[in-house]
Length: 308
Image (cartoon, rainbow, N blue to C red; front, side):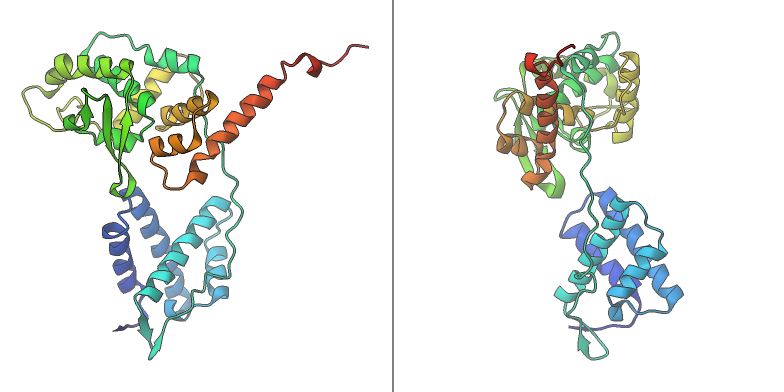
């Protein structure tokens, strides 16, 4: 039990430490929560409110005060505050001799946020993207990265943190450390295995330039490649191959999941391969599959309009 003052900043720090060390949120997620809480702290100080005495109306006023017209952003702010107050309750925080027991966010419904169907590449576009002209050590590295991403469906953040020892060439799988330090084993195909072996044996030593590193994929400084560095690479390669879709780091991950489901893969297996803790996250890809079925159904001869 703790006697506390009205300053949110004290408990905000404690809550962020909890998210970092116990919930093991990623750096980007942690910074997002930090930004939301700092905005809430600013609002409370301007309105001379105490976070421990806030009611539902105060939270709604904050959401309106922040001009959160975007449904997704508003939902994220509300989720953050709901989690923060739940943390205070579980920590049995006491203010003015009274334990905090009610979460002021509980009665505020989350706005409906329709899930966007993620964009993906067609199989033909993937083939063009993976057909990397091989001239320099960087080309062989890029080829290996792209082949591995499409073979495994891993996140780019997982890819750039891979170590040499995470690849098992005897059993043909990659050991992936995902969100929340959850481990999973993902198989790799022959194309990815071949590209990786050529890169590791012949061209990775050239990129290291007599330096040492445990990271699998190396940049021009002999260090592990960054997420931003990979994003620049895939944008450049897509442009060179005439792929003009909205390019993002997870493009091959989305393509991997979509192509597996379109070809009859089990949804639960795809969930495990992607490292999703909740199958509803994986189900977004079934919408893509359903759209493809509807599109293909247009080729049915009875769907053609009869001419007058």
